Length: 265
Image (tube, rainbow, N blue to C red):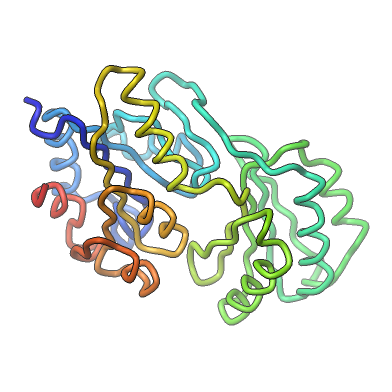
């Protein structure tokens, strides 16, 4: 009954847990149930909101707090309780938005998460600089923010990311989550930071000490998690940068990667 006691699996969702249509395979779902029945702790580490886990409730249920909004929020969905969060101050955040909106006309959309249920979007008019509309958008945002997402053409993403890191990298993280998306959050946050917090605090609260954390991902925004986990897995379809950091590489997300990892454990 306790084959996996002390193990915590944190997996990314899109491109890792789910297939290319966003579905969880029967093999993955059965493996997760078996893992939990044998004492293991299983949860998601995702850029999405905490309640995204409810999309899978007919397949499986997480039994540990969810690392959500790319690691800016740690949320216990079963108790409906936030355990910790890592927020950005709006005034510092606004400086980044003003720079991007003024210097990068290729930006398609900006989405800012000021709560754990939804993001607020800003779309530059015809992708052109509009100071008044941006300031109105900033004014309506709360004083502290969890995450921001810049969406732009794929050929612009790397150039923008490089400049953002040069100018604002001492205060914020800028990670790629897909070719057109850059996720921005507090520098001292991320999926890996949240997993470290879980390992340190979750065991103390429930008496089930976590001795091994396992992080599984596919993209650049998972590197922090892979580095901070005791065992870091890259799925076969992961980007090169993540594979280089991973301890182990498994099959692709379309080949029941989670089930494969659990069988190896």
